[in-house]
Length: 226
Image 1: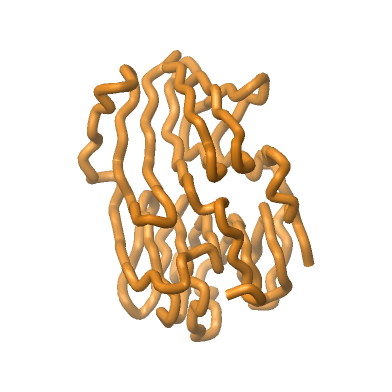
Image 2: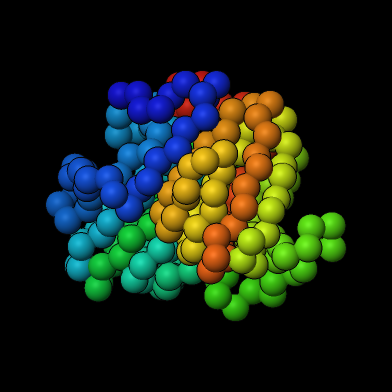
């Protein structure tokens, strides 16, 4: 299966308006944003767990990164409420579930194969650091290594930002609105920019909170290439 698998193209999807598609596990549905592969895949998705649903125990050979968007995601390691950012590195194992239901944004098979860094960050209570080079922008660093940089950016209303993307970039609007080259991105809008692109964006009248990942598209890892 291939969905938005041409990484030389800029992609914009408004996930809040996409239909839910059943996964092989009862009670678990998803909105697939990009994908290379079938059930073992390099994938970016919005996933919804019905109350008392779960996946079977499994190992993330290619790593898993997710943000809890609604509800509480759970596994044997803990409970993760909305606003939590989690990285489960390659070789990690768990049994994901949700007692009361939840929605997460999740990325699979997109880690450096040597990465063993596990992290859990509650973005609701993390310190917002003013960006002294960009007025109106606050940043919560989430992860950085030689392969990628991940952060939350909070933009005050009307803030204009520009960003070179030599190794591509990916954005998910978590709250508010951002206009990018005529496209209005609202909550759960997702954008992927190819290598060499340039982001020019302006926050809406209520500002915006945007998850941003850069650097990772310089090398496309899939289950078959790892």
